[in-house]
Length: 625
Image (tube, rainbow, N blue to C red):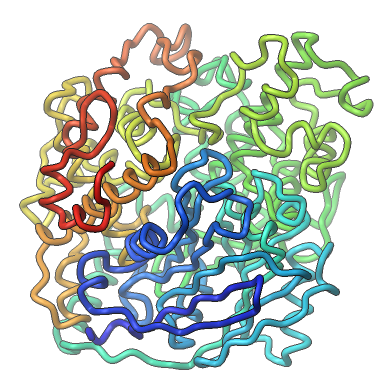
């Protein structure tokens, strides 16, 4: 077994209370690396097909990345996997912080939960010893209270805890899994955790990992950290100085940010964008916070104790997605109210993207007279009403009143409201859209991921392709990723580039890396070789990424999901009527077909070709699709 792995995985059956440890062959690790890859490999083989996402047969996995524990810069991400109750198909959610390293340091590469506990419980693992504990006293508590109470009763403040809040308990499909400075919010996996009555997962580990080639690793690490500190391109400086909240103004002015539920565009649509950008956020910053092994520290905690939206103690700094979805998308330019809404979402355990999307949808329904105060519990859901937004966050979390209508996102809310509101629900396959418009200049890269990935409408999938389009790939140490800037409307040229960076993205995920800081110049294959002792190349790594993506798609097909029917909402598929990109036409149909084809899938159906399954070594596992 390669040095970087524990070689052990834990399976917890919450129905029976049994805990089983298994060792996996090195070939599985070599073929799938870790993270999303190891997750889909385990679930595809061991989960009953057509399982109810909120039933006992669904499996929820917490999976670490390959390079966690090595000290590799920006290698700290945790991957949650399971069948999504949002789309009915493959679900995953990626989050940073410190939990993932602590989990791996307990002696396990991953932990998978199945079944449904007869009462609320949490799992505690301490250096290889796992125990299911009663969480009845924690049910109903918010995430902050849950973490504090668990650390107190276990007598160790160094314990890391991933947990759900009231939203997960209520099985809201917008529920997130929260830990220290991160939230795994996409795919509705917080609802899966709640359905299993698994309130929390606590870990404490001290196991260290040897490195196969220490000198080579130390040299790589030194060079990498130096590059992060000295590189002055805009992306690095913005994250290091402000974090992603510095994206608001450039994204609004570029026509990339959703405004008023995707009906307005650019600076004309939201002239007060500066109130939600950069300095206006960090003026409340008490201190910067970094994820494990990160030299950039884009996170931070704020102190906003005074004023109408004052909050006691320190709170997390909101990211761009939150500022956009709970700000511009709802025509709310009050940064203090967005900070508070972000804090409430963290306490309740909610995905800020989905919450901002569904509240924007409800505000449009209210403006159009489809719903009234009689429907909304007397809440005035007018655009920009910060008090209404905060009130709805709490109602959504607990499925109270009108919050029950909105608690599962825009698709399901529109089905409940009816009256033609389906046209204003901004989702793909049930997943609410993130804050990146694929029609703007430099953002067409998002469309490839939105339309062709097994998880629809996900913005993180194509950050590397976007960076490459802006010129950052030209200096890549790997020939497979060396692309000069190209015409993003040349779909024939773009398709193989998309496929390469999609593969690269999934390799990053499997290795445990941060998507934002892993631009194409990062020497990922060299790090993997140094840590594991494998003779690992980027060509091999991209094949791993393609294998992961294809097996995720096979999972969808096995579950009866026809991804060819996933389309952008009509409002987004049409050219922007105003703003900096007005009239710019994007051929999304061609993007979907060319994207499928470049991945080795059928251009019309998205079904992986037999030749692709054989080439990736998946035919025996997948069988006949």
